[in-house]
Length: 305
Image (cartoon, rainbow, N blue to C red):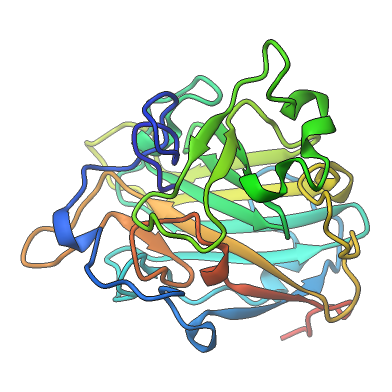
């Protein structure tokens, strides 16, 4: 989730943080740009659904059985193997972009129940959608509690018309925003962002299913699954100034990120940043769209096994 005390932001107003910093592990010296070369970033083909998706968290539709899952998530910073298995998948139809997570967790736990409270202080999974001039962050814990934020590059805020959107008009009373300059990477070439932490994705559908017992340390759980549906119609604000087709056309490539943050931490000598992702970021920062996986949309359906 990458934020720290301000919201992934950089102030200290609305949370956005993750577990305690671990010195050079989370802030390695001499970072280059980009922190991960494009040829080393994960790539994935998102096929069309083969049946109707009921967003209940169970992931029992034929579609989820057929679409490819991601590789096992790796450490966010260095990309090494993680102790518990985490995978994600993407599919779509004319109305929604769907995302699924399979999360191995022997002791499923959560405490945050209030929406937009610091879900990142629990165990959570996260999804980022990157557009040309803004990006969106989504987090969810085993309770199904959500945390969302819209980040607009400051250089594009007025130019692309974000300032004309009532809920993003920083001059209006009641609209709150924060200046954000990254988490572990403070020198992004595009500069700072405005973070709108009260912005909610219109019409998003979410569900969690737990294979075990929540907050019971006396037994061993299998884990939990997450099912998300982002309506294409809800992307109008994030996509301001972006000429991409929504829904996408066959062959269109988007950048999306998929990660997991844990209170659990492997014991030494393992150096566990407590952040895991589909594709590593090279530093402790989820707010670098240039290292998000490449998602290629296909109008084909996944082949039957």
